[in-house]
Length: 248
Image (cartoon, rainbow, N blue to C red; front, side, top):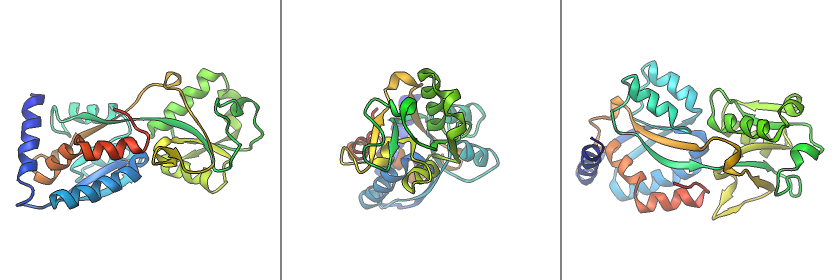
């Protein structure tokens, strides 16, 4: 079944030059920067255009189940695409992991966050930003980290919650929160943290952030949708994804 789907995807991609089309894609907020680059390369290479909407995976799930005509979901987790498949909202066997995310504790200021995360226990800060753990997998991962470190109760009064990981990043970038748990992809460029100070959270402190893609029912007959799913697994897209700190 999976092999048959992959063949169908490749066949669709082979035809895209003659039938350029547009695909509507809902994208987890943490994947904004890499997906913008991938979409530009995808259009240049195939002629197809990807219309991108960014936000929280939980909100996209609600919109999709209420009839939003997205053709592809690039989720921040692996449970939402699986759920959509089970509920008949997505094409069976179309789901795959396009990236594994990395959580970081980040401050826009140099020297605020140490390379072991000890600032969570000893630092002088007023606010710590996290994404809503009910909607954003990176927010859930942040709560798991605080629980494992034994600091959840002490930090509770200092938490500032963003609707999604993009808003959480903005809280920290603007200084409204002195530090926060964000996606490595939001603060990395060319393999380096662009500014400020950061602790890359060990993967052992939270559940894996497996980010799955799935072909939604409105996209099942779209050459552009199948072509984009193929493109995401290609060498050019993977190089872009890795440059933002994701793994596979």
